[in-house]
Structures are given as C-alpha cells and as structure tokens.
Length: 287
Length: 314
Ligand SMILES: Nc1ncnc2c1ncn2[C@@H]1O[C@H](COP(=O)(O)OP(=O)(O)OP(=O)(O)O)[C@@H](O)[C@H]1O
Ligand SMILES: [Mg+2]
Image 1 (cartoon, chains in turn orange, red):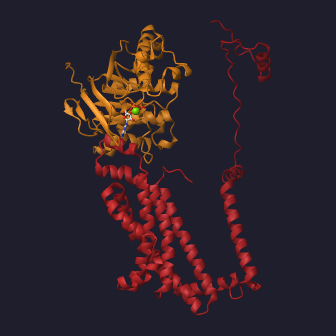
Image 2 (spheres, helix red, strand yellow):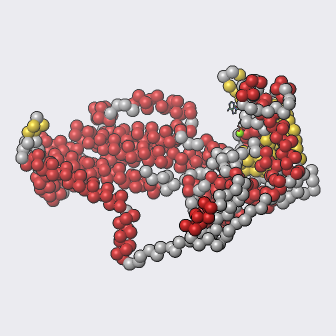
Image 3 (cartoon, rainbow over the protein chains, first blue to last red):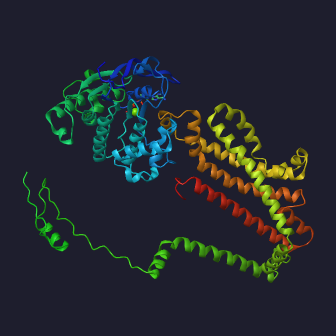
C-alpha cells in the first residue's frame, strides 16, 4: 500500500450472499469484488433491490457472506464494531438521549470519562453546525439535522471507515446538497475511508473518488468508474461538461440494469404504454 | 437572459399590486420582489396585571379543566344530597344510603379516633409491598423474556393461563399457601399487579426498533450495554403504562382480599361497617379507596413523566 500510515482498507472479494426463504436460498449478491483504499471515498450505485444494503451490512458485520471474504485492514469482519461507523437510511438516533448524549454513546461504550466525552462531542457537533441543539431530544430536530447527528455520532469514536446506506434518501434536494458538502468537509478533515450507498447518480459523482455500479439482482459489480473531478468541489461543478458526461454514462448503465430488474414485469407493449424510450435499442437487447 | 427589476422604489403593497397587474411577468423571466419592510415589533405590555392576563391566556385549557372538574364533583355531591336527604326510592332505594353530611360527620369521628387511620396505613403498606415485589419481579422477567426467545416460550404459556384468573379467586388458595393472613393478602395484591406489568413490559420489548439496536452495536455496545442503553429505555414508557394499570388492579385485589379475610385494612373497614350497620362508614370507606387509588396512579404517572422526559406528553 501507499507510504501513508492511514488506515481503513476495505477489501471484499468473491462475495456471495443469499437469503434463506421458503422457496429456498435467494441469491442477493453474487461474485462481487470491491476495494476501498485508505482515505478514499467510494460509492456504490445500482437499481433498487440489487443488494447494495446487503453488501454494506456485510461490511458492517450484520450479515455473514455465504461465500467469499470481507476484510478491513486485513482483518476478517466478524461482527459489528466501533471501528466501522455506520449511518442508516432510517433515522436511528436514540430518542431517549439528547443530541449530545447520542454523539457520546460510542465513547461511553469505550469507557471514556464523562468530561472527555462531552468535550469531543461538542467539538464534532460544532463542526456539523449543531452546537445550539446539543441538549435537544431528537424528535425536535428536522430530518437533515437528525442525519447530521447520525453522521457525527458514527464519527465520534474515530472509526477507520464510515459506511453510509442512502443517508440522504429522505431529504429534499436542497438539504441534500448541503449535507453532501458537510459530509465532504468532515471526510476531508478526518481522513477516513467512506463507503457510500446511494441510487442518486449526481450524489455519487459529486462525492466520490470512485463509483461501483452494480447489476440487477443477483447483484455483482458491473462497472467501476473513477471520478476525475478535482477537489474541492462545489455545486457549480454539476454544470461542467465532465460532470454531465459522467452522469450520462452512469445513467445509461443504471438504466439498463433497472430495466433488467423490471424485466419480469415489462414487455414491449408495456414499455410503449409507459412511454419509456429505449433509444433505438431492442428490448431483448437490453434485457 | 435579460430581466429588469424594479427594486426599492415600490412604496406600498397597494402600489406593488398595481404594478404587478400592469406588467404581467413574461414566461421565463425572474421578477424579484422588493424586500419586505418589517412591521414594527409589537411591544408586549409590562406590569403585573399584564403578566397575570397572559398567564390566564396561556393556561386557559388547564384552568377550564380544573373548574369543570370541580363543577362536576360538586354536581355529583348535590345529586347525592338530594337523593339521600329526600330518601328517594324509585326501584333503586336510597332509603338507607347516608347523605354527604352524615359521611362528613363520620369522617371527622373516624379520623379523630386514629383507628381508621391505622386501617389506611395498613392497606397502603400492603399495596406498597405487594406492588413493589410485583414490579421487581415482573419488569426484569418481562425484559428478559422480551430478549430471550427461549425463556419467553417457556414462561409465556403458563403466564397466559394464570393471567385471566382474577386475584380474588386466589383467596382460598392464598390462605392455604401462606402461613399468615398478612402474607396471603400481600400475595394477592402482588398477583393482581404482576400480570399487567409483565404483559406491558413484554409488549414494550417487542416494539424496540431494530435499527437502534444495530446502531448501538456499531458504536461498540455489547449485550449488557445494549440491554441497558437501548432495550430498557425503549420499553420504559410501556413499562410505566403497565405500572399504572398494575396499581389499579392491585387496589381492586387488595380490597377484595381484605373484605374476605383479615381484621385490618380499608377494605375490611368497609365490610365491617356493613355488618355493624354503620352505613355512613361504608361510604367513607369507599371514598377513601377511590381517593387512595387515584393518588397512587397519579404518583406513578408523575414518576413516569420524570423518568421518560423524551416521551411526548399525551
Ligand atoms: N432478510 C431478507 N430475506 C430475504 N430476502 C431479502 C432480505 N433482505 C433483502 N432481501 C432481498 O435481497 C435483495 C437485495 O436487497 P438489498 O436490501 O440489499 O437491496 P438494495 O440494493 O439495498 O435496495 P434498495 O435500493 O431498494 O435499498 C432484494 O431483492 C431483497 O428483496
Ligand atoms: Mg437498501
């Protein structure tokens, strides 16, 4: 690896995971390989149901691969732990704890003294612009604030990697953009690796160093795209030709997979009715 | 794209409206409105009188509820008075029912003698012991049953069969089981409150959001910490619902037990008054039970509100 002492190398290889159902084993992810280098920001995009959450949950340690390996810094993942922070799609703050107590939780689990906990929580909350709200209970916060607290909470223990599963999915477009900026800032300051799941192409391009595109279920890696855009990035970037070109390319890839994912439900007539344009391609070519 | 904006020249809303109707916005153009001139902030009147007025306005709902509550109790007593003083008898016979004045009189006598007070103290002590033991057993058991499926599968069938048996049906069995009368009464009080607390704790455990458990694990919480920091607080509001219901049932069971067996307690007092033809003492005992039951539920709700400050008030 590189000469820097940074940690947070995620390696997923030959990954297969199937869920046990009444109809037998249902394969969710098949033969996925991916890599997140220390300090890198990597996104996974793919059609709904392709196994993005499954893959992320395996890195978090909630699911065991049926085959293949998941390692973080060379160590096999055995279960959830504080070295891998996670932000969930649903709001997951503890309603009985104030904002600051939520952020302190990981440090408390580690036995850090109350004073020290308070100090680090305050620093992080300040970075995320949440200082005024530290004594509020979560039900008083807006959705964007809740997710910001969720990110700060996951970062408070100083994890080597941060895993995010569509964390901004429930937010409006403007709030989303601001949240992306905040996440970028935190990532740059803390120098950790990020594995970010989304289905929003713009979001993936704006945030990432690299993007993995997944196929329809059973999901595997269809493409790997390096984002050549320089940092720091701001919202005007989204009008640049490079951004738009990348977006069109990724869009085409995902569209293909989304159609495949719906293949069972759609035929040529249905597509006509839904006014879906195949850009001259034959349906059978696409599916 | 070129667009002209008339900024700051608009004097009033009327004027602005006139302009807007004169030149309708062209499609695709951006028409900026002049910045709004803020209204002068109203200065709140000062002084004690004004504060008092505001206090009344802010607490209007509560004040109304208290006044109506007093009115309804007053009406109830008035009706009671009319029915008993006139010795009404329309199928239901109020001939022997004591009037409010008679009850007040016997209350004065009862409290003066001190014996009545002893009955109250004894009943309260039985409630306290029975209810506390029920809480100390049912809450941890419910938490563990909620967490460990095996324990739940073993204990739940037994508890489901026992639950519908009213505590009063336990009286003969309790007398056989326990060496002293006192213990059997406490046991019945315990049984009455045990099941509501257990069932509600279990229910509270079943509503714990799985994503919170996952979040705790990701932050390094192990089994014991997850239990303490996630499951327990998540179930706490529901536990307090169980405690409130359990307290109500504890009183029902206690009074029944005291009426059937025993020589002390407010239930015994009420029943004895009937045997001694002390009709106004019957009503006194009943009112006492009502007030004590109400006060204890109230106390539990108050504690519940203090220990679950995050829960929204109903
Ligand atoms: N517990 C489970 N049991 C059986 N099947 C499951 C289970 N969880 C997920 N699946 C299936 O596995 C597939 C992948 O699920 P996953 O949640 O990883 O998808 P996803 O890519 O995150 O989708 P989305 O974008 O909608 O969140 C889906 O088809 C889903 O139906
Ligand atoms: Mg998902």
